[in-house]
Length: 277
Image 1: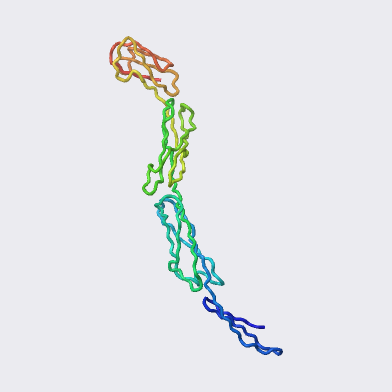
Image 2 (image 1 turned 180 degrees about the vertical axis):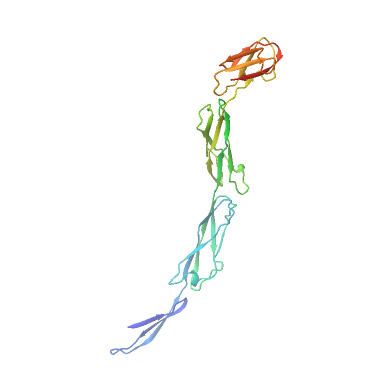
């Protein structure tokens, strides 16, 4: 039978046919045919990648080459590197940015190149929203809840936020003495370049101590009677009002009551006031 040999590579290639003779046939003359071998196409693709907004980093741009023939690979069939670039940076706003790729110094004897762009995604940074710990006095209702923020980058501050977080608590209305949770969730809080994580706070309700609320301290009392009022004290079942011409004295009046007020008669003079449970 005939044997064939063919040279490899691009350009003009020769195909040579040889047929040796045998006892029945004489040897055929060698026949050579010529053909053109064109370059194959390698596809050079910019790999997709991502970074986080505000990170102290630059995007690492890489690529992948496909389409090698036979036992060819990037190491034995190409030289140089493609050129890659992107408009996305760690300081830029969140979003997708194209990764462009071109030939650069990339070269190959037996191949031409086709280039496919990639995408750089700048992901949002994480902002921690922490419910501030609060205190309250038993019987005085709930305080106003607030939050603190940490994790701003690129010189940002609360000015980049819109809306407000939502707060709730497991403390009952008019909470008794104890500790309770302050829950914080996103509510209407929003920011272009941030997502949020939330940390709950603690509400501490302290015991109330009775205090005279009227008349004000060092008030000049006049008239035949004066009405005294005072605030609730935790666990108190009765209150004693001492009224005297000296601190702690009771030469004018001594009243014990379960109410939060009492009326006493007094001469016109400046007096000290004390309320005890």
